[in-house]
Image (tube, rainbow over all chains, first blue to last red):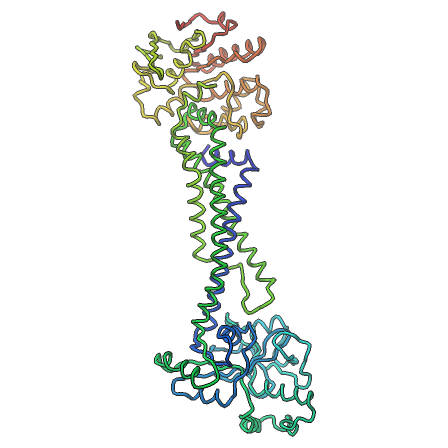
Length: 419
Length: 209
């Protein structure tokens, strides 16, 4: 009979206190697992979505809000910027690539993004089915959108005004799905892409209905202008046209120093750096993560003390048992191992249960998340989890070492004589 | 053959006790007599290798047991000496059968379930094999502790006050079992007691002053 089996049986002989210890360890480990997984995934997503974007130019307001709305599609946009000024910036010598974004509509909570082919090359998008949008009111949808909204190539849908509500539907112009993107693992999975003109026209139409006598737009017959003529229309309205924001890729590292200042000082727009704002955002989340982390470590510490007390008390009761084992031929080392093994079994069981629990809970949280932009999953294994394992082992040894040394040193003649 | 030569022990506080030499031949059945506090338990502990005497040596079958390392002594004791205590202390978390297997494995011997059955049967408690210690009566537990003492066919079986907590009927039964089991297993038997009921069964006695 191995020391392991003896330890195992001994733990089973007091199921309640063993279960309590395992639970404490499992809670601590579980919280740490969730934190580890969630913060890794969030920072991965942040990086992944902003990886090729050096700067975002938009209306004045909160730079964080600008980044959130234009890169992560979470918050509301700060406002609109004039197309003309935006295009001037886009043609600046500092800029290698400028991607226009026109936001403002959604379909069942999925944002409709008016943009151009630069967006495709910026995110290196590919279509799984169909092709990219070409004409007005054609849309290419992200992989997740296709799945969750049950849309395929050739289907039509109506966009609604706003970023999440579907109360104010643009009933005049249905979008036609021209293509579905391959899964990208970033925010584009959850977007509907179309050209900027479609978003404009949707709103021209919208305004037409609200102000039937509107002078600016009353004369436009959109059906007649579809196709080759819409370019000229866009240009003719350049003065009044607006974009939500511009995603900028720099031409050279020198732009970093010059371009943001150029935007902030010479125009009434603002430039925000995704890297800076992400760091700021993460440092805000970080406070919460840190607090939870300390909380989890505290639980683990309490668990370690509880395992220690459990083993120490049971040692008092089992003093005689251990002495008997010595008379049966067990060596000091064997007793030492038996006690250490009990500690390790408790904490290891707790750690494994905790890690499993953490994964399941995060998966549960992820599947109930409303915003699909930052969806979390519990079904990933991180290399770092091995540290949780090591921590579990260490706590087991730490809690068991004093009782184990006592068992090692015990004077069996004295213990036996006392009875 | 077991020999105790010029053994003495120092108690904490300076009190010193010297034991007269003792030679036990193979298969002998001895009674160790002495009042409480006369050093009976001390001598038994010295004899079983769990208390190193201040002076003198204990030789069992040619091995001077206190010349062994701590680990070797533990194993030697497991294989060659079976001990029965005043109260039957079994490991509560293990079944009766596992308690006996534990004794085999601690002595470094392979698990032998046939032997476990054999011993339990000869003590009339084979049906309790799967039970746990807290399900057995005091008398049954004492039988299990006898079974545990003889499971490895030791050279020497030592019983420390095995009958003092039992009534007349059980005391006689246990005494008979001890004599019978040591005979079956060809073991030397030493019983330490101050129990008058036991005396008549023995011819060899070692008396402590």
